[in-house]
Length: 294
Ligand code: PEP
Ligand code: MN
Image 1 (spheres, helix red, strand yellow):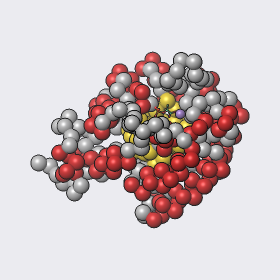
Image 2 (cartoon, helix red, strand yellow):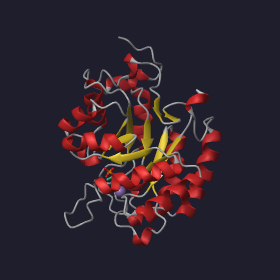
Image 3 (cartoon, rainbow, N blue to C red):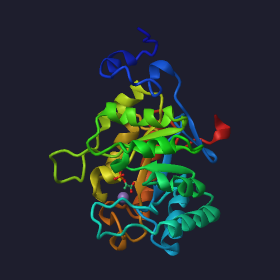
Image 4 (cartoon, rainbow, N blue to C red):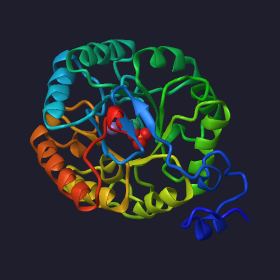
């Protein structure tokens, strides 16, 4: 067998032989994805922050300015929203993309935003710096194949009941279609526990770092559904080896049109960044890395 990576032996016993392109055994060095001036997957820890949904100009620009000031690298915000209920806010759609573009011009922050259908891929790719595939679409194979043909990084979120193998196979679809700029995102899986929205699976992060060369980040917001434990889980995620964090932040969480209860305030985000810096230094990583530092 081909076990040159020191950590891959046991992990490889758990996987099928269909895990090829994402497998560390076939690509020993970490994949480093570049987004504007930043990288994900190297020594640095990338911080993606912003609201669940883009709501209006004032909201997205205040949040973007606030998180940037505390050290966020990329701005997140959904324009097309996959909502559990059809009666909930569905997103501003193209208007949301235009507001994100404007906000990038103001702040210089690259944009991460979700694409829900294959037909939207072109328009979202036109505005976004990173295309997000949401948990609900992790096994939408036509969508995976479509983003696999785009020359932009893809942030692939783990499905709510996806095994690690299914998660890697979803990434495999994107890479097989030609796009090797894939960032994985652990965002919690559904368990029997009702006090949290999902259960953050940090074992998956540790295991995927062994099994795959792809970067993996953690989303503590959808994992918990509650802002009061976001910061401790961010600390744990970085300690376990995550390459970045994607967190929901709102300047007025009580007024948010989606996911307000899990959105941290700008003040909490500043506190989070202090903790990120401390843990990153403890484990010999830096809070961020620029391309020219590689
Ligand atoms: C989101 O990031 O806003 C989102 C909808 O997340 P998920 O797909 O993980 O539920
Ligand atoms: Mn959300």
